[in-house]
Image 1: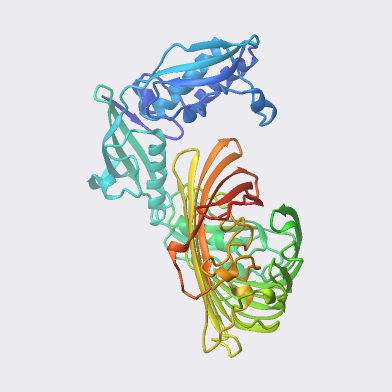
Image 2: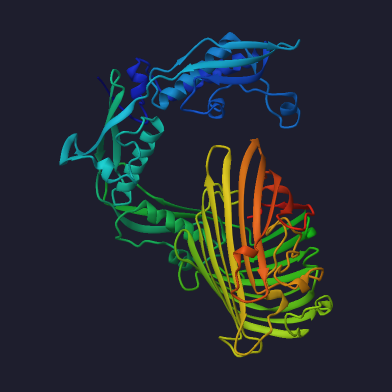
Length: 634
């Protein structure tokens, strides 16, 4: 039986200690780096392929990430810039040490790496290396307990099986394979849990005993809470244009509150939300001596008062597109900001919008904006000039949930020449009309990361009441609900799915639905087997061969596995299903139309660049569609 203490400054892992290997990971890492440099300097045989045998717990792709050797082909070197590594006896020993270090940190004390299997290829002495691994039995955790200490004496008793009662805090639980990462995470989790309960000096140390014969480990957490702390005075520095009173309103605590690091993080986030600072930090001034009053320091660095952004791109549907926006902070004072935005594309020949935004209008997480605009839209079946004004009140309720309320007024000048050619009129179509009403929306978004999600959910519900809250002509109500899910199945595979449903209904004797409020399907962000807006209501035979005039109900369903190929390059395969119907709240799943396809994605800092090829299936229309866009389809 062996006993060890984990300490961030004097670390002796139970697994390394159990084998008589001491020292800190930093020294071990430096040693590996020195050996690595020597290995790369040896001009021996180039490593062409790397294989593993006997690895049952970890995939070969995961093991390749843990060693210095990297296999590279000519394409990998020239196209993707992959480095070349060379085989030598010393470099192999270094890679074996890296594998052993990884396995032991994952609980495999007795892992063994045999002699390499080397195959030579070609005249240029390229080699294929096979690592022969015997994993053996891992160490399992057989007990986890927590004791609370004060001056090296136990207080408040001994708490058995606390790990089972607090699974959300402790992850290295009974029956789980011992992993260094879990222990370090639990150390942080336990300390954070106590800090957020008011103990800024809390400290947790794991005492670990390993039975090498039985391959079991017992963990006892010795926890010292320290002094209960309270927030003291708050000092603000670095602000010039933004009034201090506005900054202090964003602080989510007050003097005398029980200390909580979570409140510090929320305060920092809410100060950032003002949008006037480049840097904002909120730090507790914790002294070495354990005092019960913790002063705070807010350090700010204001962003430049004016900023300009310009962008240009290309898409299959909107073709060449570009935008420019100009922002003035603290306009005309306070934390308000003015943004002037202009955009051009084939779908929007021009759009100009000015937005005056007032943050923290009713609280730290609310924003009020006023946006007059003018835009011209050009679709395959209609064109219009739209000008008006939006007033938007946005509120963030929780970390993941937000909502908005949007009174609006719009004036429409419609070019309905294509619609007037339809052999079947959906409803009489005036060419000039106005819209006024209230739109509301709610969004739940836990998907991460932002541009290329691999886990989480996005759920949204948007509604519009036109000429109902306010008097006006052409009253209707409209709703769109959408659910997206991202499941990270393996290191290389993420499955994304989407369900979208919506309907628009004319009320109070009105039978007119504006053409821009109707639903359309088909395109790079819809059912990709059809081009933009070309999936017409299949249930009405008179609409075949006519310009798309949309429908009053819509359903879209998509499933898309995303598979990493190499570096920033990924492959996607997908199936899109959907349709639109003429009637309101009319959904017939036996009338859904199907398409399938595949595409490539290349990751960039602003999101993936993608190309997709798709065609209808189980359908008389079999034409292939090509889509090019920045960003995923959903």
